[in-house]
Image (cartoon, rainbow, N blue to C red; front, side, top):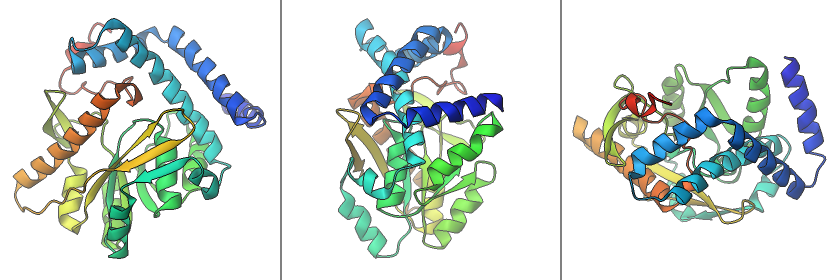
Length: 294
């Protein structure tokens, strides 16, 4: 608890600074973390090597590694800012691509299953989607330190995000869809045989959540992926991908829809790999050996 009070003091001091100073401060902290986190750096390199094999040179791999920490720092800063900002402030920094497709579904009173990943500034992406387009029900996983959970919940629910606990979350998402409300899922985390199905991800059969496809079929809801890009870490483009609708009644329809999601995610990562969350053990369920010496 004492650590949380120090964090609140840090939060208060940081928010007294101009935004440009906050950003420089967090980039400095990210660089320090990068220098000290040797074990995490090895996990990042294991993931990059496993995904890209020999197609990236050493400098490119180190650039991705370094930016992982910068991107995490930007997301933490965004959480702090989201506790205070308003929808109008988000709108100044966010542009939507293919929004007309989303607006058409909403005008038809159809629920949408939005999917995304820990890619780019996912905190501004989630807040902007909910604040500027439609309220969202999403899954929330509590932090290991319970003292920080109310802080995080305050930041995320401020912008019309309804968060439900990860345990038992599917029933809450199902209830929202049944009531023609939109939901969102992050689809890039490690899965397993119990909660996912295998799809090819970077040419490796990998367990991947099929929740979006299952919900899409049951509630006739299109799956729309959104991904966030930026050139300056100040202004962001949120791009909506083409919708995926699950029509078949057999298991193959679920497999095909899940593979399409994975294919879209992989393309986004390949196009700009530094934005993805490389520092978690994405392949631990299937290929634990790539982390065994790390």
